[in-house]
Structures are given as C-alpha cells and as structure tokens.
Length: 302
Image 1: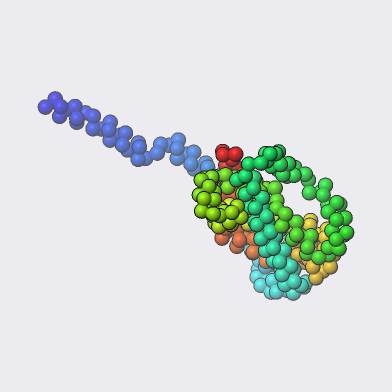
Image 2: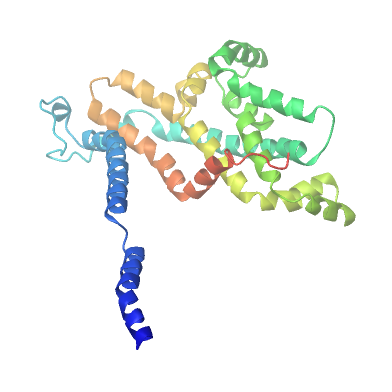
C-alpha cells in the first residue's frame, strides 16, 4: 500500500518533467522567434534591390521617374525585355561570357587540383614555405597587377582578345589551391600506398583515385570560379576594347551609357543578366556551402 502511494505521489512530477522535455520553455520560444525575425528581416533587406530591379524592368519610362515611386507597374511593359536585348548585341555578349566562364572553370579546376595534389601528398624540402608563398599572393591587391599584366598582354599581342581572361586561369589560383589541398589532406595516405603497390604512378593515382573522391571540393572550386568569371567587370573593361568582344557586364555598362535615362530598359537587361548566375547558384548551392565549410576546416594532417 505504501509503495502504491509513493508511486502515485511521484507521478505528477514525472509527468511535468516529461511535458517540459517535450515542450520547450517560454525563453526558448522567444529566442527562436527573435532569430527567425532577424533572419526574415535580413532576407527582406537583401531582396529589396532585386524586387526593385524586376519592378522597374516592367515599367514605362515615365513610371521610373514618377514621385512617389510605385512598386507595382501599371500597365506592365513586357516588351521592355525584347527592346533591351535587341538594343545592343547581347547574344554576342552572352556567347563571349560563356566562353570565358567555361574555359576559366576548366582551367582553374584542373590546374589548382594538380598543384594542390603536390602540396598535399608529397614531401619535399621547402614545401610549407612554397605553400605560404602561394597563399601570400592572396594579399596582393588586383589593382597592383593591372599595369604589369597589361604590359605583358600587350607584348604578347593578346589585347582586345579573350585570352587575357582565360589563359591565367590555367595556372591555378591561390584560393582554389588552398581549398583543394585542404580536401586532399582529409583522404587517407594509405590509398596512395595501395595504388603504388598495384603499380599506379603518381599521375594515375591523382587522376583515377583522388580526383573522383574530391568531387565536393571540385564542385566548390567550379562554383566559385564560375561566379567570379561571370561577374568580372574590371578585367574585361581593361583588356577588351571592341564591342564584338564585350562580356555581359561590360555590355551592360555600355548599354547604360547609350540609354542613360532609359532605366526601364537598363533594368530589363540587368534582370536577364542575373538569370544564369542565379540558376547556377541554386543548382550548385550545396557545393558552394561545402566550399565555405572547407575554407574553415583546416589541414589537420598537414
């Protein structure tokens, strides 16, 4: 009988403890609500320029200059898009940008992964010093290299061609080498030794074993390079002078100079220019996130 009363007296406390475990407290709910409120506010703040671009691209010229400004165009001017894309040779600009971007991605991925393979898997005198020298190039401002590069490319006869924007990517990039090296160091060295026992040379080990295992890092490098090459403005502006060689970013700048007051057409062209980077980002965002995570993972086995 005594045992029964004790069990009955303890039951409410156990139930309260069980309910507390299943239902978070008031402080937890308030904290989560504040976090979501801050995140939603930040997302809306970032979305405003994109929404304004899309809204302006569908307005008439008079509506773009109206005060107070309106968010919803009335009537909607869908013809702004064909008018904007035919005002300048944007098809040519897109073709040039695709060529530069695709070849830059291929060159950056292949060269950076090969250099990173050497730093991650081989032991040789001065390896760490050389790697630090490579990383130190990240601190050199791009503006400091403009004149030497321009003189070099003029000497080679590459000015007003796409080569200055493509060829340097086949010599690797410090950030991409760093990212790939970090990933290669997470792969056990026993795989290299097993491949060597089976008769594979270093190139076969790199190409047939390590590179397929490094797909997440390769995807991250490809996404980063794609975004950088597609959105590059300063490089094409310096090296390209003919309208037929312009990229999308330089073509948009020229478009603005030609139609400075036609903001509705300029915004329509800018909205179309954003489509490809947005599609690539949403399709490959897991590689982008993994690349960001890799940069902070550190080389624990270096």
